[in-house]
Length: 254
Image (cartoon, rainbow, N blue to C red):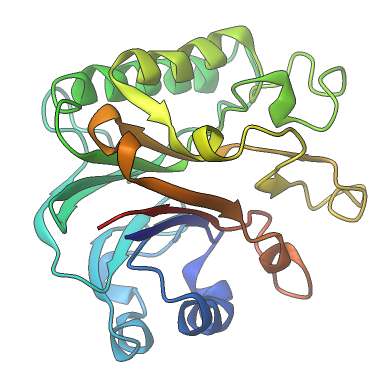
């Protein structure tokens, strides 16, 4: 299974690039974030024409997640399974090829000490709590988690000091997902530094390679023996009309 995640930063703005990429890469499963469109307005036709089934959990203007699959999509769930409903469309799950796929778009958090940052920490903790009971079997969590978990995941730790992506509490939230029974599948295959999935649009961050790895594929321990390869398609951050994120791909046997 070739599993990918990509924050497209508006499905309508990125549709042509997405379709071209799908035609070239043909991932079995793609988790999208920041689709920024209600389900009724999601441009399904071109994606279905490429052979993909869709599961959607959208929201007008903001957030939004979608799962695209070349295999049957079963048991779709939107949002958290228990507790109060999250008004923001950030979480979508489905079973594909015997693997529970969880597509997540964690809150950015704005800045430590703000209400939005508190929401981010609570959201990550809630996700870890929910997944803790499900990681005994094959499960993959893919998405923009808005955390660079280690200093090696940013181009310059000093430049990110005090940032919402690297704050100690945010990193503890990411560690909580690992404690729930998940393994950083990308890092397991690619331990070297200097691999980034997001570059700010400002200050020539991409040409300077001033990036951060905040898009992740975490897998349950049951899937670790199936890991075969991992990479970031940096080319998709290039050129006019690109998202500020690049696709992250992890290949699993089976």
